[in-house]
Amino acid sequence: MPISYSIDADRGVILEAWQGDVTAADLRRYWQGYLADPRVMETRRTLVDLREARIAFSGAELLDLVCDVVKPALAGRGWTTAIVVARAGAVQFGVSKQYQVFAEAYSRDAIFDDYDAALRWLVVQADDGSGLDPPAGGGGGNVPT
Image 1 (tube, rainbow, N blue to C red):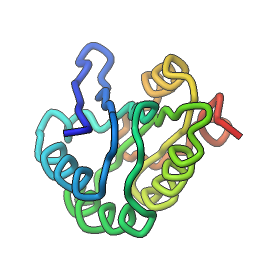
Image 2: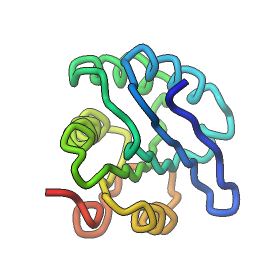
Image 3: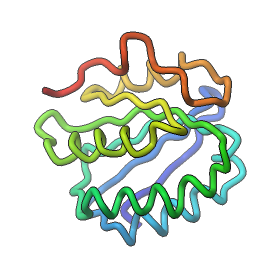
Image 4: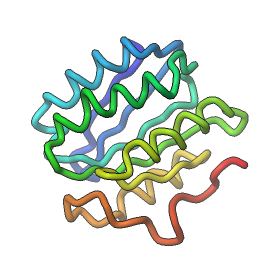
């Protein structure tokens, strides 16, 4: 599986790493297992590291997965996500922005090109469970342009 995760209980965050080619089928299988983990559903704050990933799915496929897999599993609960992309990762950045739009009803997200900055941002986010309050300043730091 090209996507894996661990839970940092001390910081109250999920650390997720994507590596190699990631297809829509990979992401569907991953999200189905991930969202069935009670520890994940309790934590609902994720640092997603895309720096080593090659995205092999379309925006339409991503939207379908958000609507068909994520939203039903969340059942109205919120989420907070810090997404880390490679500086030169135009596809990673574009997919991250698409996810941000598709998930705005349930998630507050920020995109970074610095792992440590993303982790710092995620750790200080209010854990109110809504996932809907926007981050200070509109989101993220070190966002690639």
